Image (cartoon, rainbow, N blue to C red; front, side, top):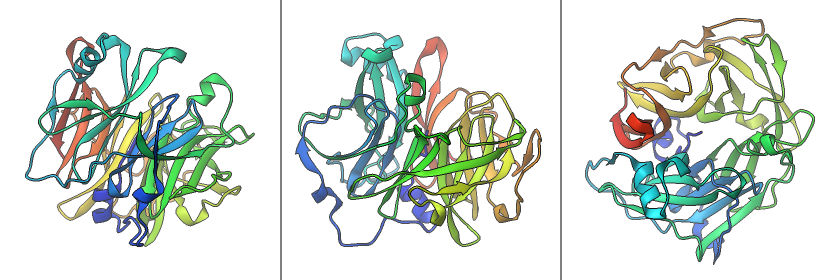
Length: 359
């Protein structure tokens, strides 16, 4: 999911920064108890504010983490068996801990994890954080500065409800929310102004899915990043099985419909999990981890030249390189300008949280 946190790296590589307005974002957050029904997609905004997608509760929360001390030095996070360590803290076993997303605070470089303790409807949502020393602590939600925006047209069916919010991003005073709605054409992107106002209907998204050979309106964006294409801000979005689509941000208007441009098909039988953008050697790259096809690296050079895929195809369009030494990566986020944070499955079902050099 992911992408989870655009703020620092994307400021460098896409010329998108949080608004320079004088607004104090934290001042819009009022102290009180937050009762999450679920904790899924995560993204950071300005001033250490963490956005949390609560699909079960059909809402997006903004939380004041009170975590604004800048990181110093080149410290890296290395925690083997992080799910086992969290389980021990919570008095349970590793198989009862699900880590749903990972996001790095670009100010402190502490790593935040959305966690489910238990499984199914009775699972308890939690937010945990890890510092460079490997210390793990729970973000207390009993009396925290917060605000929320309801997703008014979230699906009610159980399976679809899980996809009410599939990914989040903050960009220029707007939280972009990908997921499903309860409408006939259910794939939806919702721009929600921040500080939060009443959420409006999102934008219905239609794409051509080359490996399926048809136009689709009911498959949600799984993960996305913001990027300038031909000097205009876009979202680059990935879908299951695995089309890559560009969507102009200016077209994402409440209640409207946008037809995305499919610029790549990366192979069927696969689910994208997270994407980040970074710069290396003067070139911008997209890095995406997947359920079945490993970690893919894609250069954005000449991304504007790839025409729309509108006919059945297998692998086509924007080329990619598979990073062979990155195996079992379940979550991915930018850590700093040279490194990423990954959550990777190791032996015995344990999950390791560690930084890696950007490939």
